[in-house]
Structures are given as structure tokens and as C-alpha cells.
Image 1 (cartoon, rainbow, N blue to C red):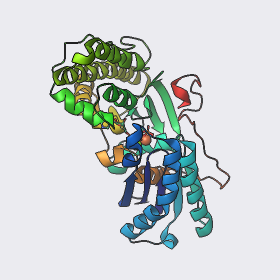
Image 2: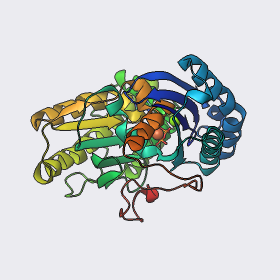
Image 3: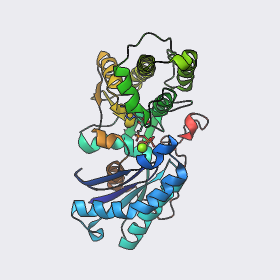
Image 4: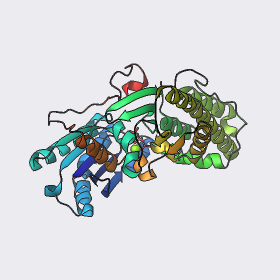
Length: 350
Ligand code: ATP
Ligand code: MG
Ligand code: FE
């Protein structure tokens, strides 16, 4: 079957056509980065309007690149949450309209499930596996037991990892988006000068916290004051990246142990997804921690790590196989945890 996937939950307008055997016939992503850059972050109203302006063209382009027409599609999958609600509604309503007009099944996809399953689009990874999702909006560890079956081991109790990078970049005057800028600056610095915290280190659960780390960076910037030099910025970026990496490794190591205790798996795999997975310092650290416990790391290729339509189409393929289709009454959800019994108070409901 051919599935059209639509993604509009944040600041990427994206459409893709994916086949049932995992071929990506097209994967068109339009980033709104330049539209949000003047504000130093994503502005929800601008995002929603931009999705309206561009989604039709992006879908057209995805069909053309795939060499198919609406009549060739077998199903439509669109992100129906969690995310910025205005944007989610644009993709969801467009997807429903196409499915209705073509009289084919529709699936409202959980954006996080798109990230969670995307690795299976390019690699043979069997359930169950561990997932570390680190992006601008999310930071969580899940056991992926199957399609629609998740066990949350940990989530952030305040900021997401990418958010911590972005806020730190702002404090250091490094521009937006902050992750790549901080990584670049850290390469020119030497860690060890500043004493930054490793939040929640050693705790028996697998939760994350990054707001204290960001506050510690702010305090150091304030201490340096007007005299702050370029080298100070580089060194502080290096210490921030080190502290964040060590904190994540500590929490992930705990999750690896829990997975080994609780789950039977032929392969022991940690899947890392989300924009922050692009950070090579973090990746190297995670590889060492995984190696010690006999886990291997698998990450989707970078274009599938950040938000895209192919991962939504693929989640649609996986659900279609199981007959898990929705009717057209499915609604948009700003919040939608992967695991239904997750504690609502933690991690902003996602
Ligand atoms: P979500 O997917 O959770 O809805 P999002 O669209 O903001 O949110 P992504 O597009 O997956 O998330 O990732 C963007 C985030 O990744 C940003 O916070 C960015 O700073 C961060 N990021 C990108 N590259 C790097 C890097 N090399 N090092 C650290 N962080 C990075
Ligand atoms: Mg994004
Ligand atoms: Fe995402």
C-alpha cells in the first residue's frame, strides 16, 4: 500500500509518500526556521498560518516526486497531536479531507509514535526496544513494546533537552536554533572551568531535569558580567554540554538496567531520535555507556530524526497493517502521552 503522511505539529510543514515495504517515495520538509528566527523561538500563530500557506504545495510536491496521484494512495496519515494545536489542526483537517474525498482510510498519528517507530523504516529493529527521544519539545525514555504499546521509564520534569540547548545559546548570545551553535562553540572551549550541576544524577527513576542547569549557566554569565570574553563563552558552552551529556547518560544507564531486568529481547538496542540526537558529543557518550551494558545504539538517519512526513506515513503503514484506522471524527490533541496511564503531572502531559 501507499500511505501519504502529513506533519504540521511544530515548525516543519512536511508531506511524504511511503510504501508498505518501507520505501520512501518522497519526503518533502519545509522548515519555518527563518520565519521564527527573529523571535528566538517558535511563535504558534505564525506557525499555524505558515502551515496553511504552504501545506497544499508541499503535498503536491510530495505526490509529484513520488510519481503518484491522489488516486494511487491507499491511506492518509496525519499528525493529530501532541503539538501546537493550530498547526496540528491544519494537517489533520487536510488529511481528513483527502481521505474523505478519495474514500480511503485515515489515521490520526501521535507525533511521538512517529519518532518512536521511524527507525523501523530504515532498519530491522524488533520489539521491544528502548527509545531515547531528545528534541526541542520532548525528552523521554520509553520501552517500545509494539505499535501503540509503550512503557514510559522517564521524562523531563521541566525543560526538554533541546530547549536547554536553545536557552543556553540565548544566554551565551549564540543565536537560534541553539543546539548546533552550542556544539560548535563547545568544540572551541575546554570543559572543567565551571562547576555545573548534573540534575537528578543517581536517582532510581529515569526522569530528567534541565532547568537548574540552565539557571547555573545564567549565574555564571552574570558573574562574568560585561568582561565576558569569547573564550569564556566557549568554555561555558563546553561545560554545559558536558554536564547535560553526563546527566543524560546517568539517566539512560538507569533505563538500560531496568530494561535488562524487566524485558526479554533478542537484541539489546537503544534507539535515539529527535534533533538533539544530532549532537556528536552526546552520541559518543551514549555509545560508551551502551557498550558497557551490551546495548547497541541505532539512530534513524538525520533527516528522519528531526520532524518529517515519512515517519508519520510509516507509523500509518504500521497501524494500517494492524487494522488500526480512525474514523473522520478524530480530533486534534495539544497533549497526548504515548503511554495512556502516564502520570499527568509530569513532563507537561507529554
Ligand atoms: P518536537 O519534535 O519535540 O516537537 P522540535 O521540532 O523542536 O520539537 P526537533 O526538530 O526534533 O524538535 O529538534 C530541534 C531541537 O534539536 C532544537 O532544540 C535544537 O537546538 C536541537 N538540536 C539540533 N541540532 C543539535 C545539536 N547538534 N546539538 C544539540 N541540540 C541540537
Ligand atoms: Mg522542529
Ligand atoms: Fe518531533
